[in-house]
Image (cartoon, rainbow, N blue to C red):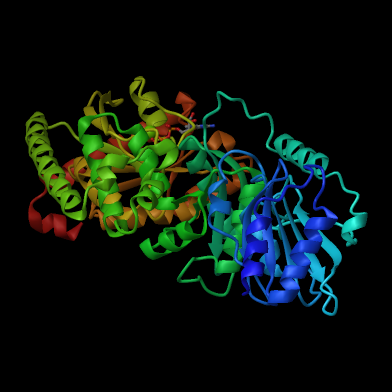
Length: 555
Ligand SMILES: Nc1nc2c(ncn2[C@@H]2O[C@H](COP(=O)(O)OP(=O)(O)OP(=O)(O)O)[C@@H](O)[C@H]2O)c(=O)[nH]1
Ligand SMILES: [Mg+2]
């Protein structure tokens, strides 16, 4: 490049256009002529006041926008910069141009055609993002980002009032976001499900994720389902789709993306590299809820342990990446200072917590020994989260354990006494709810709590008969019981929330196929068959226990 061309490029940085105009004829001409001479694309980023902020020189077919353009994402709705650059071959706005427009949230992307003979500016082609109210169709598949293309015109005939245009777009975006109160600090999430098979399960699973998200204190803005032949090992959804989702989030005003399955450490890193939005996966969401709920010091130790174990393999990359990754909802989770400690210290902390759990376990064994001496039978209510376990315990024992329309309302096991119809006294345990794909570390960490159940004489497996995922939930609970080696304990299957099931015949069939009882924990009148059944089962067990070994083997 000649000295005079460099000089002219540098001068571009001092230019200013009236804020209401996309470009002046003069600026268009300067860009076009320079571009023609050096046979490269030349571009400028212009702020809302009309000042040129950056000058960019590309090659013959593309320019790369500076990273600073992205760092301004935080405040305004669009980022307050428009990009104006030249095209040497008369091509329309390219896919790269549109992706930059959306991902950087530029005010506008405009290209100026350069006349190949004269170097004079030809048509100006421009596009901006359209605010949307929905980002998916009725099948839950996300829509392509919406762009509005302005009619191509020579620079002298551009009659758009630029400021007016951008301000009305921003006003519309603000309306779409709804009247978000300043006091509402809840984070706003878009849920993403990727599936390799049917949509039905993906939809139900997404419904569960929505409940998890709401239980965790998030506002769910929208849900996206993507179906693909196989999962993308790098970014789960595929790079192009990911860009699309990120753009959707920006258009929609979301703070985070929640994925309906566990992301590998590598996937988290790759996705984080593509966006400043917070990323959460299903496991982390569950961990987060547990962190919010844990009341006792034991519960807190267990949750922190699980969080640290989840975090350890993901401990690499820059500090900011990590804090974004591990911040959890509202910046909860193990906390930023803790995150900056190196792996060794995390491992030390894990060892320390594991020792503490061992101590708790000892104390628990002793307590249990005392209870054994009292020879009271123990019955534990287990089941999927939100099945109504705490409600049932309350109804049976007339107590007031927290029961809520929230997942994982119960974290710490609670015991109550219950006098059965024939005067026998028993202990009833309420337990932490199970969930499909319970994070492995969490399961391990909660083993201690669930050890309580190990000593049970009977398990009541309580299931929500009104859930569309009933069969699935039954299987999940069975699988977890097996993993916890609790499947040897006699089990009584009980369907709850029968008041919510309209089709009573179907309910009766269901009970018959599964050999289960039907109750409604909300209605104490429905519980008599249950207490009778408990009594019978315990009696049978006692008789068995009193039989000599040979007879027991026969029966
Ligand atoms: N309609 C109806 N709602 C019920 C019934 N039993 C429980 N619920 C509701 O279901 C929700 C969950 O009840 P909980 O008792 O907290 O459920 P849980 O199994 O203890 O849940 P976690 O502790 O979160 O695992 C609450 O909103 C209850 O009011 C029932 O028989 N009928
Ligand atoms: Mg509960």
